[in-house]
Image (cartoon, rainbow, N blue to C red; front, side, top):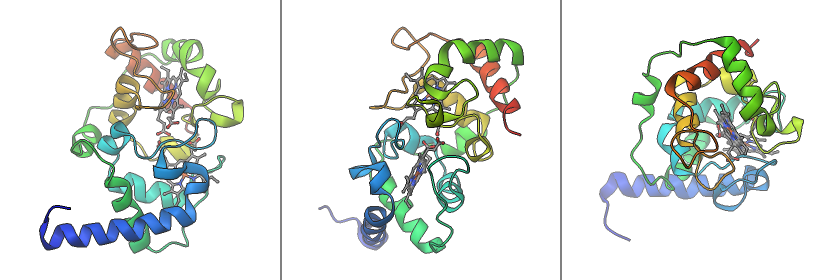
Length: 199
Ligand code: HEC
Ligand code: HEC
């Protein structure tokens, strides 16, 4: 291990504590090293998620869980313990954080009807016709529910659609390697539609 100074050592100790807490509370669903398992729980250690998710997103998601999904609330864990878990997850990061930049992106503007049509054609197979997630039988998470929509920026959704999540069934939807090559406008149409589901 290289010498990282006091701050680095404190961080490593925090991540170590977080690893233990992760093993006790999360691994059953999110698996060893947080790699996830489609249909059971998403990956928490892929580079795309780690680079766009703010600490606040992680904190609130872990604290509140996601109502109407299998992700339970961990409100009984202290703020320090949740911070330790986040430090552990961050130890897998391969890219610098872009969370502030991504969250500052402009809100999506688009056509709800076109977005709905495109969502049904492309996204519903995995995420469910109303974005209900695993309950619909696919591999995708509940992106039509408030547990997700209430905690993410349009930039977070936009970047995820564009880049996907490595080593999961969520491939990016831009470029020729994507499941579909969507334009920025088409992606924004979908985001505007998703926002109508947050009731
Ligand atoms: C082949 C299946 C599949 C298709 C098609 C698909 N997704 Fe996904 N999507 C996933 C999976 C699986 C995940 C979670 C990744 C994981 O398991 O770690 C995900 C994650 C996401 C997330 C992040 C959700 C979160 O909980 O953080 C968003 C946003 C998203 N998808 C949007 C879309 C949109 C919009 C479309 C259509 C353009 C789409 N996806 C099409 C499988 C799919
Ligand atoms: C009983 C299974 C289960 C347990 C235990 C569990 N989770 Fe989850 N978690 C899920 C599911 C399922 C989802 C996706 C819910 C959805 O469809 O939106 C999720 C989603 C998440 C997300 C959002 C990821 C994303 O891609 O947006 C985070 C962060 C998370 N969990 C962290 C944790 C942490 C940390 C723990 C332990 C303290 C934990 N989870 C324990 C099932 C679980």
